[in-house]
Length: 471
Image 1 (cartoon, rainbow, N blue to C red):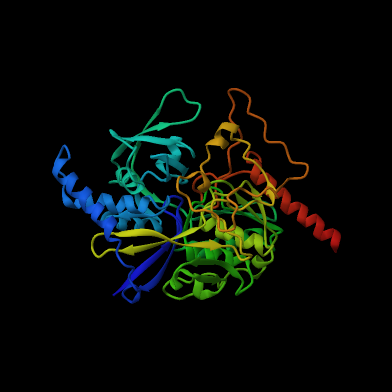
Image 2: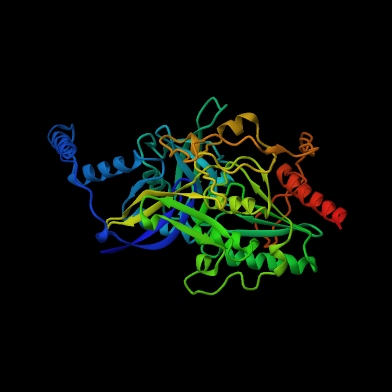
């Protein structure tokens, strides 16, 4: 019996997803723990006979499976048929909902980050918000999948979220209209003459080819080789693994190692390099074939923060290990585990943590994250906002780091002579708005009011000066 296994690095923070085959029938089954199963049967019988209300066998079994998985770590879970379908839709870049990446925290649901240009982001929901009620249903006790199921629905229908936010005396109530969430994977623009900017919001099926198309247009617009490029992975919760490998491959020499995984079973061990077979889609064509040759040598600065998770950490870690880019920002989320999604016939599937992934140099990101080369805090966030940022190490039952270090490294250095953050706008006047993106859509970050982006641009300009001095 062969079953498709979808390898995912996290339901909570986007994740990493790919396809593989598993021959489950060939695996030797472990002996059943008879004593523990007798206890389970006894509890099952008592509930059936004595619970205050009748409970169906299906509900009891489903809840038992959920408890068995969610008790392992924050990312293992059980999905019914509808939830399984929704997971597939999410990786294709389109689904009906609010646009919130969420995680479990002390029995409640915590916002990791709102997705760009969605109802949640437009309404003002923030990273670190604690969802305590969905419509009239208290969230405590709900699994992440149950919470997602309640927030998703027919586009145009409304849902009310009650949110607890630090430093707010009373819960905040948001009534949002569900929408078709079409997450735009890649956006780009010229920051100024010679310096380009690319933003990846999430890794999807077409991310590598969209990145290649965006870079081509930036080179065409600049009419000469770029002096530097900023790759923005801030608040990127992850996505498809082949998309992450493709993005890394756009900037690395062919066949360079991007990421590898380690687990207990042979099929949980992978070594993914910057090779066509590791990032091509099913049609087999190379999405990077028309990429300008200069892209693989252009000075590169990568922006990361606490919302950069999973697939975005794979890209950042690979570029940092190969000394291909300077990382600017703050410590990343720390999602360094891989989940296999195993279909259960027509009854959905289970999501089970089966491996950890490592950067090319052997670093485990799990519960630690990637430390930027240049630390630059978000000037728009208060100390309270930064304290509310949830990371993998904050999640209950998170896996330990196999290198024995769950604490962020302290080797990062602050930027030399940092540019002061932009001053607040005078009362009654707005700050200068961010420039519209190259596609004419949602406005994008501007170095004049984005301190981290200005620091990344400064890093690239310093590199230009150093190169000239060397020559």
